[in-house]
Length: 66
Image: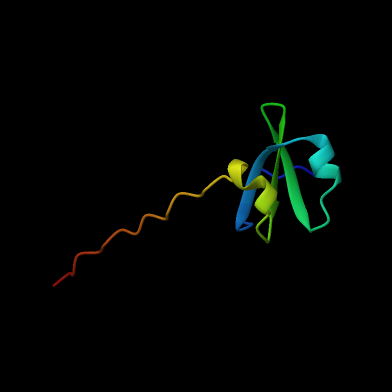
């Protein structure tokens, strides 16, 4: 089942069909622009050059109310 958003800590892509078929860890997969992307719970050193870094969350500072 393709996913639209990964909550996994590590997201890689694009990966080839052969790389995808060889995965031995739990993963999620989706297609974007006809390319395969995966989300996994642990780092995959071989895919480091294709790691997709998540932007840091933006935290809005609240001004104190009186």
